[in-house]
Length: 368
Image (cartoon, rainbow, N blue to C red; front, side, top):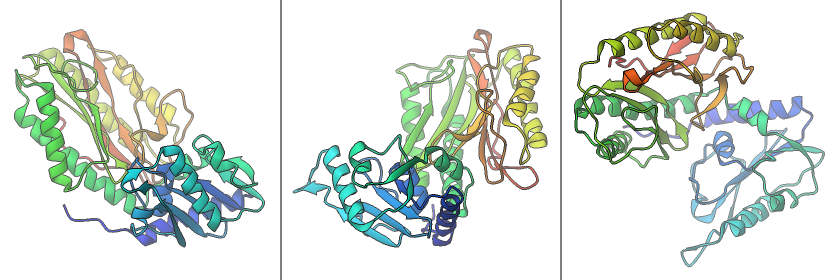
């Protein structure tokens, strides 16, 4: 895989969007403590071991606090400050590093007026380092993250190449007698080989003759279906796709009937999804279609956004009231499940919401 360099212009567009958002809400700045939000804001990714915090002002100034050994990490910020995260190669305890990151950021940042903060992720010690008028900014960040910029799409497109390679390999090696743990190992190996670097995430469903779950020390049997709902992480960004493979190589009549009932849902979503359309309405259309299937039940969401988390907005789920927006990156995953199917079929494609509809991003084989 070719290396993807930091796209400064795309990151600066995100920073400008955030500054506009702060102005619209009469906030002077925001304190950023959720790792995914810091990555979104600055392009920096360091993994889960150490904290990285940032501040961004309504005037557009961004200050980033990183562990000392990551201070030269490619990022886009007006100022980068650091804290000591280790002594003689021993990691400081997490609460010490949170305090150290906070102190480094506090020394470089003053707040005046109302300030946004991710109140569900910021510690009490971090918040009390400033005498600020705090306002919850959690939901705002999740809303801002929905619209994907070019650099985010490039990372997710490259990560999806690992998914494509995993499904191609799975179709070669799935057969009666294959062990779930062996397949898991092979899929992880081809994903790393495809991307040429360690994964920041590897999931989700690797069980045969089941709706999902981690791999077991179990072998696949003839007549079973193998749902592989797979995702990888590349520098914090996720993929999420699903394919179902007949273990014996030839699906039963009931399995083929279920598959034929699912496929039209993808045509429906490509016809119906537009900016401003209700996600609930599209979910309900899919539910009505799948309720007429001769075999199996559909009893989960129709899909969700993907990005810096495997599940983001928008939610194609009756428990949310989202509408589609330009820039939404979607995973659409209709399914049917029944004991007679051993155990069911789930198929998942990725789409991008455009000004006029949706673009299919994962045009890979769907066959059983």
